[in-house]
Image 1 (spheres, rainbow over the protein chains, first blue to last red):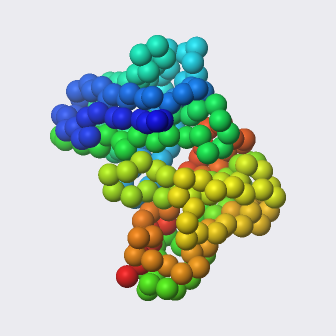
Image 2: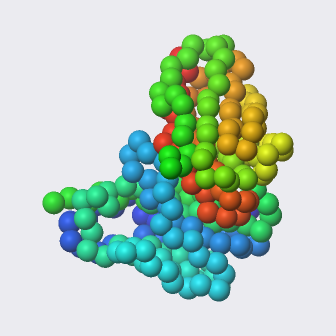
Length: 113
Length: 112
């Protein structure tokens, strides 16, 4: 069964600290993996998208890694800011057409002063 | 360039009422999607339109209908709303299937 699991469910960190969010998936055949940021009351916004051949991709203070062999991905946030408080959603795409996106339930990150 | 625009942002319906959620994109994308987001669950695909003139069911289509009015617009209709349809609905678009999707701001629907 195609599934995407994220951990932790929620996380609280101090402003300025780093953190890492995890994503494990069983989606097959794999096409790409995406990380989205969703602010409260807003739609998800894409942070990174990685294909099978990419094992790391950065977007500012956000760095995503992908290990396609172990089917794991992580999102590392450096020097967190209050504006990083949001839900981070891992989405895995399978090679099977439009009905092919599998969403994790997200990690709720809260950055406190 | 507004991206993906959804209307309304909030709606309260009584059980059995009908309504249409509107979605428009100005990015000339071929593919459009409707998702629902419920607490503790990932986004779930209701319907999608891979290209203008086509629509297909997603994971949770029961109780919904869609219309791809033209390349820009993709509407979602609830014919007889039920409390189980209380959710946040997101419209998204992408250049083609399996490319990066851009989401609207969401419609928070409550059915009482």
